[in-house]
Image (cartoon, rainbow, N blue to C red):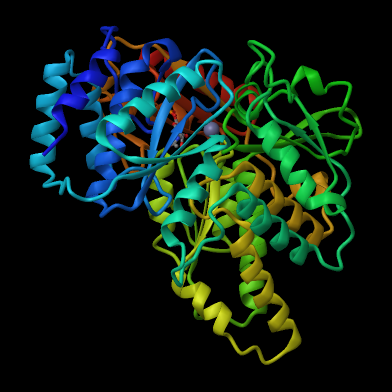
Length: 533
Ligand code: 16G
Ligand code: ZN
């Protein structure tokens, strides 16, 4: 049975002091860091129970609020295969976080153990990490009390990125098996990536220096370590590395700043040369955006859609060159936010599927292919190679040299890419590999297709829960009649497309519009916002 005495003792040290409603959403729990103490403690216990439920396999816990302001923080659980927490448990997490007293928490916990038939005699194992936020240490201490209360065997992975934590979870759980993911350490991660990168770049010219905006977050120390493993094979210029500078995290820099403002970080104005490649990570280094200044000093953004276009066309050609196009089913997964031009570009090359926003949906849809590529426009994405395909690749008997080269490239790509989750640093190396193979600079990459001008606006509404969507969030079914108005407006504009959906992370409704010109896209977005409000 549950160690009720011990849990009570610890729980009283972490009372729920705030009336706030906690919700385990698409990004886990995410709130101002100061209200999260009780939540972290309870997540510690829940993670222990999740591990018991999964027969003692190791569960991951990441303390981060990603691209959000420095004063926010959050916590997210990672399932034993390195993927997002099973959705049925998200509901439990929410219920447990909202129990107002220790007694209520305990009784909810008991009901839950009963309902899930958790065998408490099983071991509990967890691995945890945090980003560089100042509220991190205290929240980790609360989390550790949760581990102690449930008696979990806990491994501290220190200050690291979200994708490395996912890597560690999968590496720990596949240790000594046929599917061994790599050595279960940061060293193992860097070795796996850097070796694959060097093999893929063999015989290619060394890339010109890449400017990396680390968002003043955990990406900074981790990219610095990666640079040591890559040495001269990948020259990197790290900027925005001030992790101890109060208020600096994600402030006027980082991947989300790039995407939402469509501007270059002010700190890079004097650094970036025309034509030079630059990229931005977000606060936990799971999102990546590229950009450059053209010869006239004009700023151009290369977002997740552009990364998908670059990577997907490269992989499609490798699979053909390997003579495997009839054995490997490749597909791309996007959301409604994908630029219409990217969808058009990709659709002529491979199947494209649209799913609802959120990494979970993209990841699951990508798993239906042998090679599934997904990127959100915001820069989060990865490529999944099914185990079966990885076996086929390693057992292949190529009949020509060209086939053998292509197969080796595919094998090395599967090592280079962090298949557990979007990983800014792994994706950055992937982009660099494709650019080197194509002999592309930013301009050539950018010209794969031209983005349709677009506009995203937030609308504050009384109750966002009345907004219900279907068809991967592209159509509103409620409130009644609203979709017809949106259609009528969209049809008035050249290449007009728009949709309205409730945010999963903020108390707003989002309106997206694209059209042939910037002015039209802006106008369409604001006219739709007007009918939504
Ligand atoms: C979360 C999602 C991200 C999505 C964003 C949309 C995960 C890990 N992250 O950050 O994929 O793009 O939410 O936010 O699932 P919204 O619902 O507020 O538009
Ligand atoms: Zn992030």
